Length: 158
Image (tube, rainbow, N blue to C red):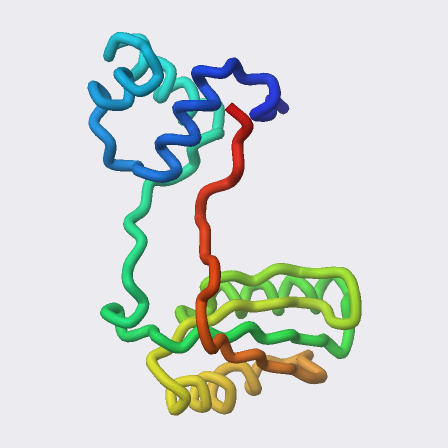
């Protein structure tokens, strides 16, 4: 599998720019990486085809999207058998409030990130959805008070 370290400087620069502005016009992108538009577009298409670029998204303001409350929840399962993990993973995929779900090593099994409107919605999520999932032995929640840093771009050495 090819990694970013195997790309040339121009490809890495293209990835860096597109992470910060996915709607940049190809002509402007080409100018910023010192290419003409056609080869620049060919490089972008190749980076998409090779899987370096997986999606283009719009990042919404959570307050305006009625999802101002962000929380991280540690989840510990009763069992970590293949079937238990598969069942839990499937449940997480079905919960719209869950933005991220990572299986982790350490004192608990999963860390999930949720966004909801407010504390009442969080309470309904915890009591009406998360607590109904079979196999969870305990949870611990950390409510975000302030976003000090929130990045979506992965650092690429250009």
